[in-house]
Length: 230
Length: 230
DNA sequence: CATTTTTTGTGTGAAGTTTACACAAAAATA
DNA sequence: TATTTTTGTGTAAACTTCACACAAAAAATG
Image 1 (cartoon, chains in turn brown, blue, green, purple):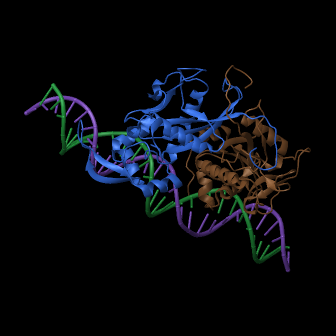
Image 2: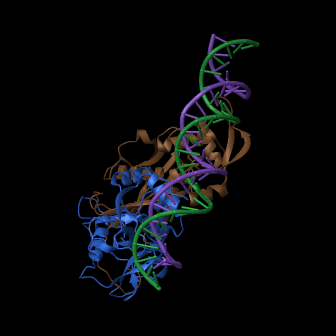
C-alpha cells in the first residue's frame, strides 16, 4: 500500500521465487541445488530461491538469484508455474513463483559469497525438502514439452558442438534414444545448424564435425515450432 | 506465520488470481468480463478475479471465482502465468496468478449475486484497466500454443457437434483458415472423433453429420501431442 | 607396425503424410 | 422449378519419415 488512496486489508502470504537450474555435462542433465544454511531443514538440499522484494518483479528476483549462484547474467529463464498449496511451507503461507533456467555449465563460476552448491544428475538427486521435488518434476515436464516443438540447446551447449553432443542432449532430456542418421538428417533439414567445416580438437576417437546454431533459424523455429519425432 | 516456530519479516505483496474465461459462439471466440463495482476504475471492464484467501490454493481461488461468475463447476482451467510487475496495480503491490478457462457458453448461467458480466468477442473488446489486456493477450497466446499440439474443443463445444463447428473453433482461435477436406481428413485420421451417424437437427442448409470427442483418444493425444498444421 | 575398437559420415527405398484441388448431392429459399 | 449454400468424398504429386549397412578416421593395444 505504498501508493494510491485505496486500502485493502486482506491477509498476505509471503511470496518467493525458486529456480530450477538445468545444465548438461555432455551425457546427463543436471540440476543445481544449494544446501540450506539455516533452520528449518538446515543442511538439506533445496532449489535456489528467495523471497520477493517489494521493488522487484518475480523475473528480476529469479535472475538475481541465478546470478548469485552461478555468476551468470543474460541467462535464458522461463516462468513455468506458481506453487500455492497452503501447507507447502512449514514456515507459514508462502507461495512460490517457479522458473527454470538453462545454463552452460562451463561458464558457471560459483559465487564467492554463497552457501554450498552442487550439481546433481536427474537420476541421482538427494532428498529435497519442502515441495521442491514437485517443483523440479514439473520443470522437467515443461522442458520436455518444450523440446518437442521448439529448439532447445542454444543455452545448454557451448558455442561449437558436435552432432553427437546435440543428440545426447535431446536423449538426456527426453530419456529416449534416436537413430543417429535420422536425427542428424532431421536437424539439418529444418536448418537449425550451421556447419562450421571444422572438426573437434581433442578427441578420443574419430574426430567429428562441429556445428553451431543458426541464430535466425533458431529464432524462427522457436516462434513457429517444429515437430521432433522419430 | 500461522504455524511453525520460524518467523520471517519480509514485506508481503497482496496476491490475487485472475481468470480469462473463453467461450465459443459457433463463429468467434469470446471472453467473459465483469464490470468493476468500486473504485479504482469503477464501472470499467476487467477480468474476473479476486484476492487469495489464506486457506485456499490459487487454483481453488480461481475455481471459486469461475463458479461465482458462470455457475460452472468442474471446468477446465489452466494456470498460465503470474504477473508481478511492481507497478501493475495502482492499489499497491499486487501479484496476480492468472488462469484461463474453457467453458461451454450454453451451460453458463450468470450467478445471481454477481456484478454485471458480459461476453465480448476478441475483436470487440472494451478497454481493460490494470494490466488486464496483457493478461488476456498472454492467455490467448498460450491457448494458441496449446491448440497446435493438443486437442482443444472438448470444453468449448457441446457434446455433439459438426465437423464444421470444430473447424470454425480452430479457425477462430488461430485466426487462420483451413481447407475443409484436409482438416476433416486430419482430424479423423488421428482418431479424435467418434462418428455418431446422426445428422444435425435444425439446419439452415444441408444437414451435417454429428461427431463427439472420443474420450480415450482425446486423452491420449493430450498426453502425446499431435501436430496440427496445414 | 598391424590389428582392434570406437565413432563418424553418408544414402536409399518403402511407407506414410501432407497438400492442392473439383464435383455431385442435400436441403432450404425464392 | 431453379437457385443458393453447404456437405461428403477421392486422387495424384510432393514431401517426410523411417529402418537399415557399410566404409573410413583416429586412437589404443599388443
